[in-house]
Length: 340
Image 1 (cartoon, one colour):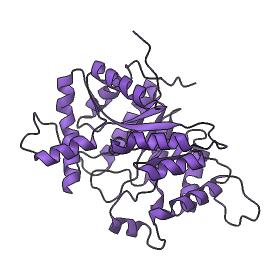
Image 2 (image 1 turned 180 degrees about the vertical axis):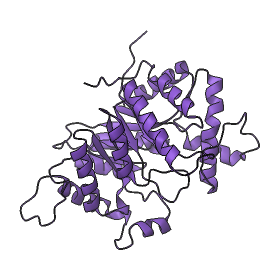
Image 3 (image 1 turned 120 degrees about the horizontal axis):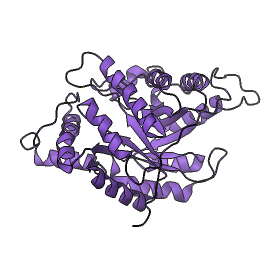
Image 4 (image 1 turned 30 degrees about the horizontal axis):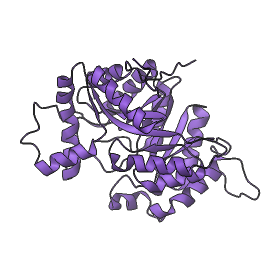
């Protein structure tokens, strides 16, 4: 049997609420417990994503949550996957992540997205006195890079903390725009294939073909988002995955996305066109036993030559989620991080 291609594995978390949670605290506690768990398993990084105006997701104050997670772990990288830059003044983000880097040196990542991560009304509420237009993203990125780097000649506004912190920046995307910008800037690129896999190969190929080496990166570096539901058997994984199916269905319908218990069957819960939409959303999902997951990951790495995979896994019972990552850590493609 040939040796499979290996890659580091990481985790993207939304600090998700269940339908039985009272307030946000239980979701935050589960996120920390998961971060500690995957650090012990040898995962490379643990990211949380900025979302607003969603009753089921409590990672909106992303920098604050990152501080909590970094304090509760020891060596694993922790960061944003990502901060939605149109929502914020670059100076504020530079100060926040400069502070995080000062507190946890060498462990902080800053992934940046150009979507608002919310509806337009919420986007306006977040950034009332600034345009917040996604078209401003390249200029906002340049401004942020200036604040995080050394002070330039004549620079009158500095980020403190932030200046000279050189927090590693990633560009995130689900289309070709960020792929092209990441290539142009010589930055690592993370594609949101965990919810929008359709343009994955096109975006990755564009990024690699147009990549320009930079002071921070000599060659392209691609990370892919992957939905995960691993269990001891394929049948159990399919059962647990119905929590994820119900959640995406709620998103499509504009309903509450609070996690609901798994069900024996989705029949009667969705219409045919909704089933098709959910399956498209989860087109890259790894659902099954360890053996099934291993084969799917090996195929994905062979097809894409991805440098790293970052997994999302929202299951109703916390122990099922912990078990899912234990099973994932046992596949042959896992390039386990050995922390000093």
